Image 1: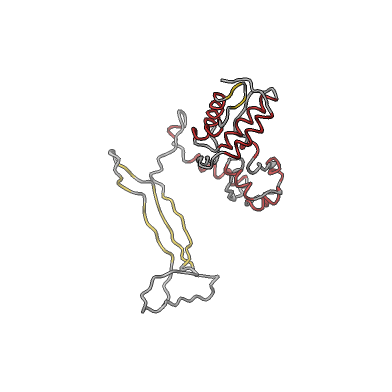
Image 2 (image 1 turned 60 degrees about the vertical axis):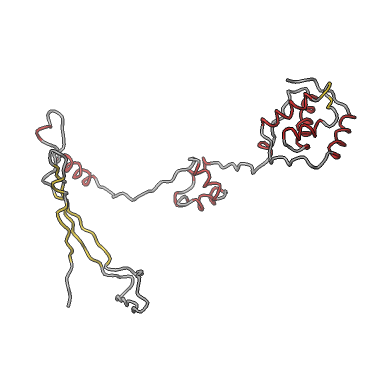
Length: 262
């Protein structure tokens, strides 16, 4: 529901006086008006206008009716009159989303690929290379515009190494299935062995002691050369019966290669 609004300088002057002289008992408005509130204010003002001119005390009555501040009511009416004066459809929506808040920082992510990998190991060094802020890149990472990649060193394989690995894989095929549908053997008769070095102790250890207990005293010849212990582990393929119960968990044993002195 819309009406033609006629501009009247006297009305503008009277409305300003009305704004200054309205009583102070009107409820304080909310921080921001919702689109529904703005539409309700505009429709209520139209109902209290005659030929585009508000009746006396209309803004106060609408403010009390909708529980908003009278200045917000007047701003909505003023916006509507400005739209009518410019010959455009009445737009009383909030302009805050368009004109306030921190402006988006544009970062040219196409330059990332031109930066050496050694300068892309963390967001701080990458931000410095791009001339941007670390927080900006962190937001772009959260948005999925940057991705993190964990890179591990791969063994360098010669042609001979590749042939040996390929030959080992082929040797695991079941010969009886080569002419139909090749399948790998069950590997029930294969035992896997692996060794691992462990430090005998750590440089720093935490203990919980009794108040009257002496603090432990640990010594080594060189803190950078703590003694190590090697363990050998043997495992195999687990075994299950027809009902799915585990009959052999595959753990054969673990042995420490140590020598007791003294």
